[in-house]
Image 1 (tube, helix red, strand yellow):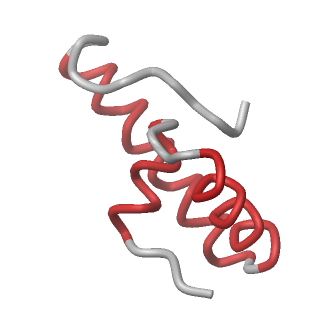
Image 2 (cartoon, helix red, strand yellow; image 1 turned 135 degrees about the vertical axis):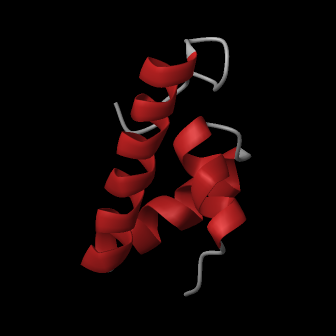
Length: 64
């Protein structure tokens, strides 16, 4: 199962439809490197919020 980079960012931002979210979640659980990539995207977005302010990126996080 492949997950595009756009889907990955939309997943982290909580912007996927329920079925898409479930598909990406299954892929993240099944493939550790993808889970690592999700963590890296979350860290990057947190850093961007810290540097540029909270208005820059959405705060919704489906993994919490």
